Length: 375
Ligand SMILES: [Zn+2]
Image 1: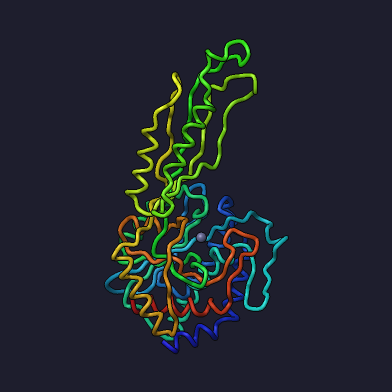
Image 2: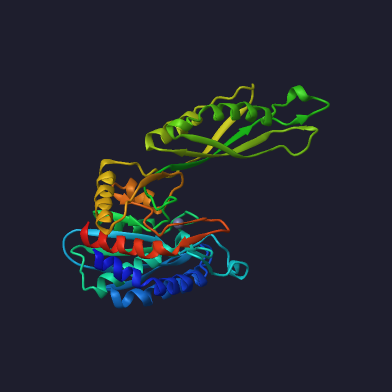
């Protein structure tokens, strides 16, 4: 274990160089060609360390990269994504820079730092001639940040072959891994009323905005923040002119929930909303978009094993819950024990101060190498 950590630490300058190179290959979700450049870089770097590396084309998106190593019974999936939320040329304003122990750059924390950790964990095992007794598959996806996931069937097939999934997303502050994530649903509540002249015949109209206002109060009453359920009305639309009784109005709703059951209950409750005004009609569109990662016994047991391995390296490995989803949410929902947030520590995902803590690169590399060896 000492040897793994020492080797990883000695690789820090090389890891910084690699992370910088990856950040400098900008890779927004919406630019398949740009993602393919990063895919090419990863294939080149993984090829000498893997039994098999390939690129899987995805229509309308960048390729996936898949690398396999190890042999034997059992299998682990190491999951990451190559895309970032940053448009091309973000680097012009925010080039990579190092200040003290922080490496700043768009996509550094979410999650090119995680990709760096994956590469160097494999390199560490190789250099020390340590072979995982399990088959390990690295899968790097191309459309994590925007959803849609046209490659979901590939992710599912790879995940179902495995006993555990390790996700390279950024950790919680301080390096805590994520053993729970909230699920998400996106709904539109649309009201149909009847338009009329606001001056000549207001009584003939059914005001869709007023009806929506009644429904908004109901939506707000569904919140159970303490229980992990939030129902947020983020956008409202309706009406065209002040002198017309509006015949249409709608709200966009974001729902977060800790368990699938809780999410389904909220969606069902909204589906049963009845109009208050005579003549108004309500329509609810949309559904569950990402399932929650529930902190099941299997996830807790995977976490505890990981924590024991981290302890042998000399680290504590705290855990926590995240409000947002990742592709690990799917693998957990398919029933495969998933540990998320194994990327290096840092801060500022999707924000201008995005950075990775440099000492964490070697620590997370050693941790992932040890997990691939001992899990
Ligand atoms: Zn991410």
